[in-house]
Length: 346
Ligand code: NAD
Ligand code: ZN
Ligand code: ZN
Image (tube, rainbow, N blue to C red; front, side, top):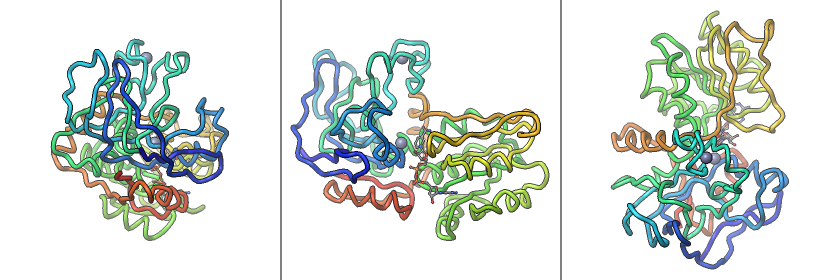
């Protein structure tokens, strides 16, 4: 089968022919219907593979949708032919976090060598995908897999980040969304649907700011060295109640902290360079402001998001690519020229 593989650090991924996998005991084989392209892949491919405990070559793609093609011995409760999306942050299933559905924070995954598809295990940008357990599948019914697959990360990650701050999103509150790309454009829609907060989007070009407005941002501000002042002109002295930073480099974290108000949440979702930090302390941050850096989301939250998608309230912007053209999706991602999410349709 064809698969898009990360072969050499710092080089672009390659379309390669590899053997079609067979499901082992407990596993499920999907015929892939859609696979999303995430900016995290770009970060991973430009750093040493040892940093993430991954071995090369690696089939990319941690956002996956597919149709159940075959199941391994002992698999119960999922029918051949079912259309599903894949919950990506696989855990052990048994520890306290996993028991909450928060497999993204599994306390034993590292010790057991459990790695997400596309981030260590073979990923979804291929004709077929092995999923380690039917527990990691969410049926999507008649939803379109292409516009639904981004919900597994570009939706789930902001959904989790927003849910933990729902108490801050009272009427009259302000939420600042930095970076209106794959994750950010879904975040804006989720904020609009789940709360009455007013949204200020920050991005680097007029085109991106127009895009942010088109998906629901009330205000849009260029992300430059005057961004914090320009945001404060809108919020007034109270500042923002929630800041979601989908970039995560020092300049955007500094902007995030500079616009945060008393008792606000500053949530750094973008992985940036693994070095940038938010400073908390008297004189450095507003009273009772918290800063956090969440990872992905819970299994139950993906089920909730699929339910939201069935209500038809989300409009995910997708650029489609064939498997042969998948390297071009990564080029556009790196160049910042995508609108919404790139999705590979094998
Ligand atoms: P993307 O490339 O689709 O979107 C990034 C957006 O940020 C683009 O619109 C870009 O124009 C904008 N941007 C770039 N520099 C900016 C700046 N200085 N100020 C304001 N906007 C700026 O990326 P994505 O796939 O949405 O991922 C966003 C980030 O989130 C990445 O760092 C990714 O690695 C990370 N991520 C984290 C998690 C997690 O669990 N924490 C999950 C998925 C992705
Ligand atoms: Zn991702
Ligand atoms: Zn666990």
